Image (cartoon, rainbow, N blue to C red; front, side):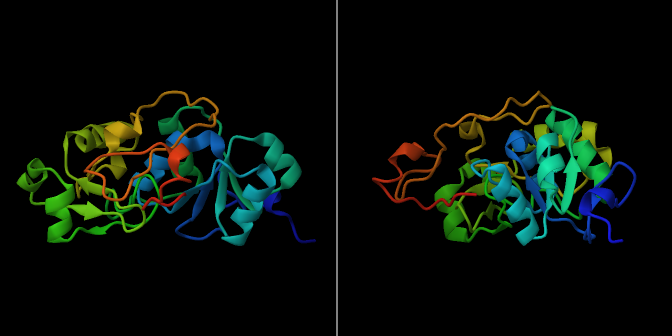
Length: 235
């Protein structure tokens, strides 16, 4: 008899599901927002759609062949996603260790290769973009300035990323080597410190978005989205 996804395992205590790929594509539930950014630091394709209900989340995971990361045992028991990893901890860095172990992940070739906010792979910024969008201090480093083609954010090497790399080195020493990560032009505006703190259940609220023509680092309240188009895209 063919076994269901909940009965198949890649490794003991690891991902449960059918046809788990060597380089997994992930989908995180609404309770794992702090974990999502750390997964993207490791260049893992991780979708985060906290607005979706459980049925839509499972359908998206099946349609895109993603491993569903969840702390919701009710979802696992009653909706039986085809591929999933049950997360036990409520602390982002402990959750990250669970994913690395559960998916049997190897250290990535490079850190910070995709946008921490919208998940799009980064590209090198053009000279004009670097001059317009990044501060003069960013050009003191030899590392290229990067830009997200999806939401327009700009990244460069900075003190914030050195702190993040040090934090990652404590949690996953094997994943914190060169090349060095990049600093998000709007990291302080995002209002999240990448620390190992328990994550509360998310509550509805405005999301910072970019207004066309606004200066570097400016944001608009998402409630104004209907009155003014934006260059950002929802993830």
